Image 1 (tube, helix red, strand yellow):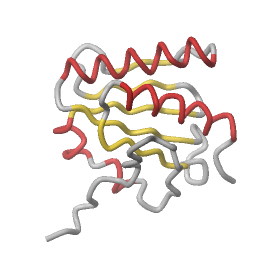
Image 2 (cartoon, rainbow, N blue to C red; image 1 turned 135 degrees about the vertical axis):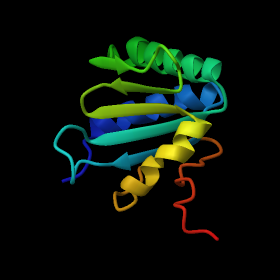
Image 3 (tube, rainbow, N blue to C red; image 1 turned 90 degrees about the horizontal axis):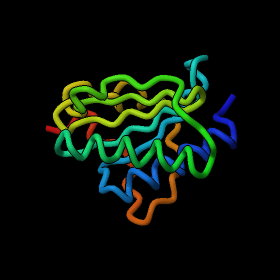
Image 4 (tube, rainbow, N blue to C red; image 1 turned 120 degrees about the vertical axis):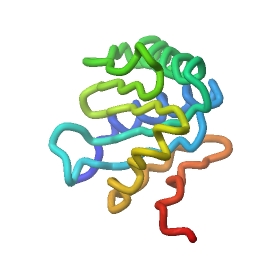
Length: 133
């Protein structure tokens, strides 16, 4: 089983919105095989809380405008250190750089296929997996 075409399309829209707001290290994992709750995890970094909030707002606006989608749940918006947007098949994680380094979601999902996002400077390679010395 792999992520649906619709989930992939929505992930690319969200990734483009994040990229337009200067989101960093944007990567999407096809988590449909190990998880029944979602098809794709999209992970985005930002270097400050204000930028985390701006990226989250841009993603929400883009998905409402283009796909008529609103998140089923939004968590972590108060502190803007790690905001999770749950769209059902797509779960978006927008993290402050420090949270991204600390929780290292890429390590958890490193065995899952990476989804090509088609961003101009496609940095959809996951951040270091901690094996570098």
